[in-house]
Image (cartoon, rainbow, N blue to C red):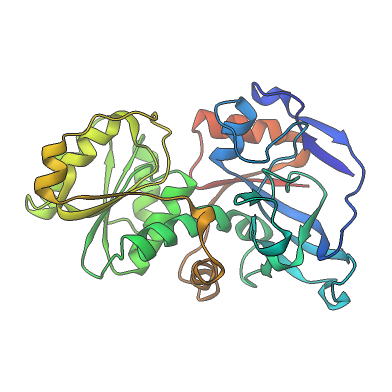
Length: 336
């Protein structure tokens, strides 16, 4: 089969389309013909050498968000699964797990290939009204939004939520999840075009081009000086100081990424006197019930991934490059 694989870290060009043996499903596994896989920021971090994860090794086939059709089953798996249209929940749990964070596409070969072997318990039904690209794009970012906003921040109707990085996969997901929860959404993006899409396509109530406008002033105007109730923050870094200013009394600050840098300068007095709850989250720690809760938003047609572009498998390197350049709104997919 064909797979997009890299043998060393570096620029996107280290990813090469290669012929590799078809995976053989082992006991408790199925063989999935991949119809689409989504690119996530962690894929880029691993390929570039900016980060590592448990079990990750090279040569590596990335892609932990995917959707496809079951082609074959391994020993002990009911043949009725053959032909099922499925999505894959990337984290492997239970007896089949190889450590605490055993993630398909990180600790195991992933979906940037024509086929992949996955434990049968990682399968879930593909939402019937989603395209293959939309189904593949849901997993990481919508689980993150649900896990952060609904399960940890416990967003309530009428609250004001600040969502950073409106054009990112996580940002587009968070805007939709917050709106589905009945919140008012203020969101930031790096261009007027992305702000317009966040408003017109996703229903954000207030949009801010952070390159031209101070988002803390918009927050103060919208909330009457009170500050936001919740911030969904995939950025961190240099923006954290202003984010802290924008938060209100007893607000919840959900940090899920650090594309703006790992280090931030915070005022302890502000944290204390506003009684801010600062919570870091890793969506891979979600349990089966929490993952099912996120997918229920898709099956109920409450949210829908926005696909910026679908690249052919042979151009997986270009998909990575597009993500690094930030020239996208929503999710980037790869199609074998």
